Length: 197
Picture 1 (cartoon, rainbow, N blue to C red):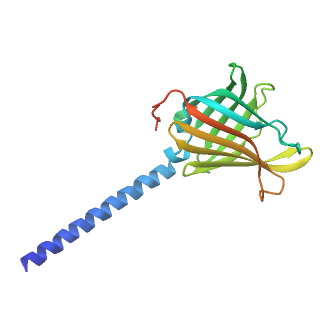
Picture 2: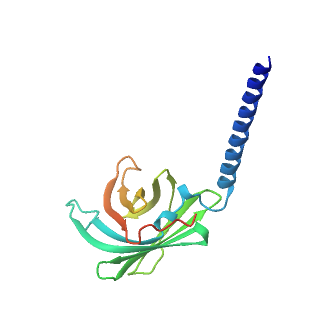
């Protein structure tokens, strides 16, 4: 009888501990989801630092003849406002800047707004929107090319802490098919940079 009671008590205590642990985990997750800051998995914290970049880009995306150009460059990323803002600067192999991007996190909708600015014009373009699902961040927006409405898409892929890829594509059929026009492979220069979150 005493042995059965002891087993029952142990079972109850163990079950209670599991419930407490589960509730604590759920509460912590709920707090994270309600936070104004992006969680580690949905933020751009991983890009902070300096990178070598290999570009592969279509010379004329609208041309029937697909002529690709490849070149090297560098990139630096700065995280601001505890992760709500990520700023990117791209330079060519000679160190000359050719573009930048500013990404801001909409904490209410849990989406990123990603806007590009060319070094040639200095004009901040309309942002594309997106979010991360696992290690892949997909961003899509409507744009115009040769008087036609198209979709543009940018995709980030976190390969490892020291390697990241980005690719850009456009669609003329509302996203049914996509034509790639720019690939970038990032290799970290300052390895072992710890995430601020």
